[in-house]
Length: 96
Image (cartoon, rainbow, N blue to C red; front, side, top):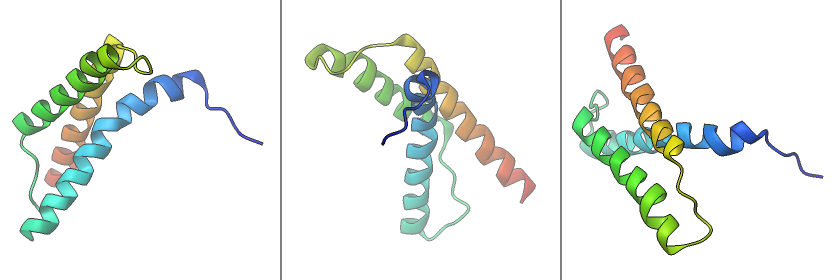
């Protein structure tokens, strides 16, 4: 018996959450490597990583593999997720 996710969850929530998860994991690793728990990712790095993910998953992969499809809304969701991450990191930093 398997549960199916609603279409919006499967198609859009994954793309929105992708960048916050990737950025959080990267930030966590850098903090551990540097021994600095207050280190934050600079916004140019966040934008660069988001652009890389957008081009790779929405432009490059759909051209070489039929399993992938290009969707401009996914790009919007990648950048929205990155903005969410950036805002939450700044909000958490200001409050603590």
